[in-house]
Length: 248
Image (cartoon, rainbow, N blue to C red):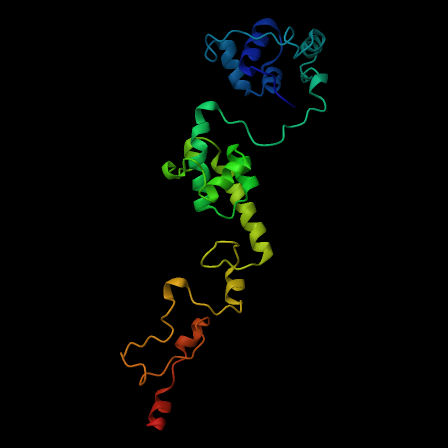
């Protein structure tokens, strides 16, 4: 059951103007029974002006009389026909004017630290447009030189739970495709098993050119290690001492 608007002020009015039990008022206003008792004793909601639910179209006088006659009866919020069929507004969320200048910084932060998020997700998170996101991605925004990445949660443009949910959804969608993330572009997220099972033998970019590196300083004399670098166990399968003596 939905609670009435200005629930505590409504409870004050019901305590002062009806003989309803504390439990009935508490159930209707979504308050604890002891809190309603505190209102009656003057310990809670001191100075709060009562809000008449009858004149404000939340209760009917008949419903109040019925509840007064039967302590087991639960008050029912008055049916509001205007709310039937009301749909949630679709599209980007509304951003207050005072925070709109912070959106480019938040977009840059999301693009930099969460590249797995799509433009539609970013647009929904902070209430911006896709052309703006694309301009910041491509570094063509008119003020891109002065934009510093700032967490949108710190700026109050979205909640941490909303950001976490969007990142988790994007990661799950990316992992389902099974594509491996390259060095030059973070495209998809994969599990460890998928990454180790790939046929791509390329080394990370920061180790390129070290394939034939020898610690002895002489590449002709030092044999190259042919063990599979993707199998960590192979580095612990050292030859037995007896085998080395036989070779000598």
